Amino acid sequence: MACTYSILTQGIYSNFCLIDSNEDRCKGEMLDLQHGAPFLRSPKIESGSDIAMSEGSRIVIITAGVRSLVGETRLQLVDRNVKIFKDLIPKIAKGSPDCILLIISNPVDVLTYISWKLSGFPKNRVIGSGTNLDSMRFRVLLAQKLGLSPESVHGFIIGEHGDSSVPVWSGVNVAGVTLKELNPTIGTEQDTENFVRLHADVVNSAYEVIKLKGYTSWALGLSVASISHTLLNNTNKIHAVSTLIQGHHGIEEEVFLSLPCVMADNGVTHIINQNLTPDEAEKLRKSAATISQIQKGLL
Ligand SMILES: NC(=O)C1=CN([C@@H]2O[C@H](COP(=O)(O)OP(=O)(O)OC[C@H]3O[C@@H](n4cnc5c(N)ncnc54)[C@H](O)[C@@H]3O)[C@@H](O)[C@H]2O)C=CC1
Ligand SMILES: CC(=O)C(=O)O
Image (cartoon, rainbow, N blue to C red; front, side, top):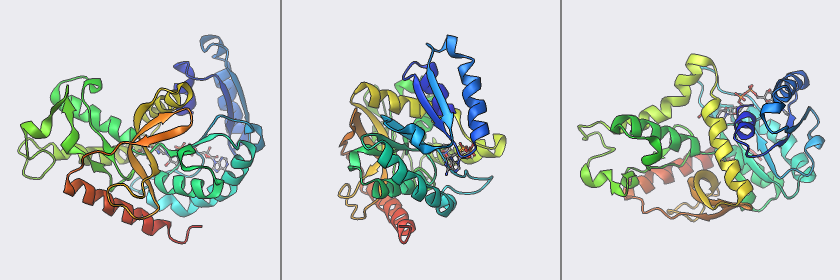
């Protein structure tokens, strides 16, 4: 609902089909939104529990499944959510054969891989929301530390949307000034300015919000709205999203992880080849090995 609300209120798209196995909850959400239609350019919103209602969709955003309880990692959800995806993805692929699949449910990297396999879609049209959210969290924390607007602080978190994510300290910059040039120890334990703490805070963000309010929603909704805007308007904007990264940075496994991607109306068009340090690339390869291990035997 946070994705829907963000897309609707920003005027990005106005034709929605909300599907949930809990039909009443979904209808309640639909009615509540419809009552706001005069403020929302009179959108068309339907709801139901039958996936066939979504036939012919341009983008299918999948958030179905269980979420983490307090202290539970995203990877611990894998078996329960893969089961749901095995049922859903073939039906969606049949009903909306030309759609872009935008996966949100966790563990998002594994479920994006599973969706790619089960849909038979080309890799560019199967995308996980990945570390677009983590990168926003990173920029917000960096901006708070530097006393700047997050829009003026640039940096990426890549790899797993989860505990093994990788901060690209070598590329963090403000107006083209790379912070690593000013502070060569940035992102290491030797750094007296303790920037390394910010990545730990990014990794801990979801755990903290879940402990406080039970789930995360708004930032993810805004992140998905931003990705949707790019896809629907063919803008070639770069987002860190989960895509097939085999062959990049020495990764041999068939895994989906986040790297900065150029995105347009047919999904991911290019992966940006960042000039990672050997340490950053090694951490990414470790992340890939972890995910690959988890994927074994799922299909
Ligand atoms: N990638 C990211 O950054 C984020 C991912 N998530 C993930 O999104 C997922 C959903 O989280 P919430 O929305 O907080 O959970 P929620 O419990 O509020 O919603 C999940 C919905 O899925 C529905 N559902 C379950 N099985 C279904 C099926 N087979 N068909 C249709 N609907 C089905 C449930 O009825 C429920 O309404 C979780 O896996 C969570 O970890 C949540 C926030 C951020
Ligand atoms: C739940 C989750 O994956 C997040 O908020 O990052």
